[in-house]
Image 1 (cartoon, rainbow, N blue to C red):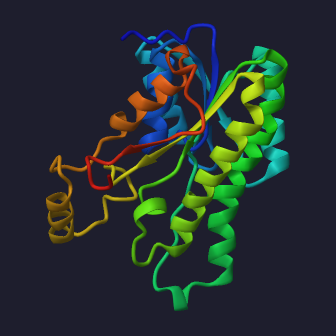
Image 2: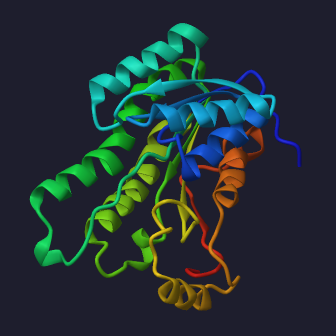
Length: 249
């Protein structure tokens, strides 16, 4: 299947590294003009953009914090000024804070929710209006296996990612009449900065639990997201897709 996104404009949040970088690259390779969002690491964002251009794609970097609704609005306004449209939104930006529940501070809870859940809502609220006017749009939210399986020490992260699932399903119903498809992808353990710190012995135990016997790669997620962003997925909305090597079925 050849996916053609030429003429489309995409925004990928948290696209300076990891899963976000792989998604931005894949969307751009398929032809979408891709905005690479980041908050602080401009150097990493430019590396993503360089990879996009070397692969024959096109795009721009776009700094803003997803947890700041005003900044999100300004970022989307810039996209609309430059491109006149926004067709694809991938809500990938996220952070992890965790540990024993009794040691979790209120500030940690608020920060994770601000980025992981409020950030998704902010970006959707800012982009869905221009999508409604065009009666077309694809929104893909990145959740997590932890939202479904749970995990010790991941109470805040799991709650924020579970919230994304509820948000996805409700908004999919709300905007379906405007031909806007909203879906979620729940990755398992993917080789990113978030998993690189897992001790070797623990990683081996984890891989023994994964039927496919390996950690996932960012590209494993990017391929699915690109499909969901295309017209090939025009009759799919309100769904959650698991990319975890069979760890959660």
